[in-house]
Length: 326
Image (cartoon, rainbow, N blue to C red; front, side, top):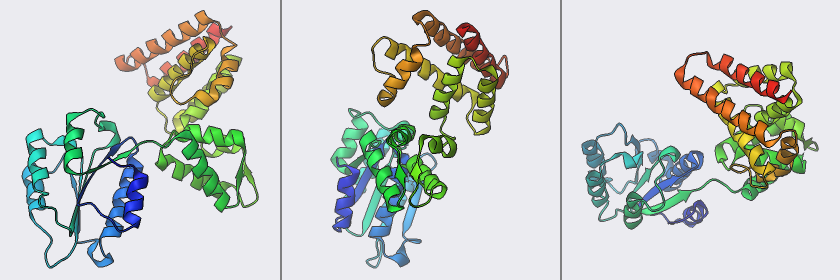
C-alpha cells in the first residue's frame, strides 16, 4: 500500500502500475488522482475514446467482465475506472481480478471505493486487493498539512493570513482537499495582493461551514441573546444547513464543552479550540451542560418522529437552552 505522495512521484517518473485500488476518506483527492492518471497515461487523442468509467453499483458483473476481457488493439492504451468496486460479490471480485492477468502494459485499471464505504484496515476485501493490485490510501490531510497548503497558496497570491484565522480555516476544512480548494479560491477573490486574511474574513467568506457558525451560535446562546440566536439559525438554514445537521453540531459542541470542563479533550479535531471552549464552558455548571445535552437528544428524537417542523423544533431547542441559562 502506498500514499498519494508516492503515487505522484511514480507518475512523475513515468512509472505506471497495471491496476490500482483507491480508498480512504477524501473523495476529492481520489477523483483528482484518477484524472491525473488518465491525463498522464493516455495520449491526448486517446483520452476520450480509450477511457471508460463504470459504476460498480449499476454495472453488472457480466458487463464489467466483458469490458476487461477486451484488450487494447493496435498498441493503443486504455484506462478503465471502476467505482464502488466493493459492491460486487466476493466471487465476482475474484473473477475480475483474475482478468487482470497477465498484466497488459497498454491497459490501466483503477478500482475505487467512496469514502462513505471505505473498508476497515483489517477487512478481508482490502487484504485481497493488496495482493492483486497497487492500493493507495487517501487519508484526510493533517492539520499541519492543511495549514501549510493554505499558507503556500495564499503566498503565491501575495496574500497573508493571521495565525488565528489560519488555525480556524484549517479546522473548518477538517483535512478535506475539496473544501480547501473552494475556500482558498473564495479568499483569493475576497482579498487582494498585499492584504491579510482575518478571522472576520473567514466568518464572512466561509459562512457555509456550519462548525464555525455553530461556535458563534453557542456564544450567543451563552450570552442569552434570543433575537440574535434566532436570526443566526435562520441564516444557517438559508445557507443550506438542515435543522438536523445544526442540532447535531450543537450536540457535538456542548459535549465538547462538557469534556473540556472536566479536563478532557474535546470531540473530533477541536484540540486547538480547547482554550476557547474552556472559556465558553465557564458559563455553565455541570448540571446545566448535562440538561442541554439531554434536551438536544430529545430534539433529535422529535426530528425522527416528524411530529413538529424541524425548523420550529430547532428554534424551540435554542429557546429552552437560553431559558435554562437564566
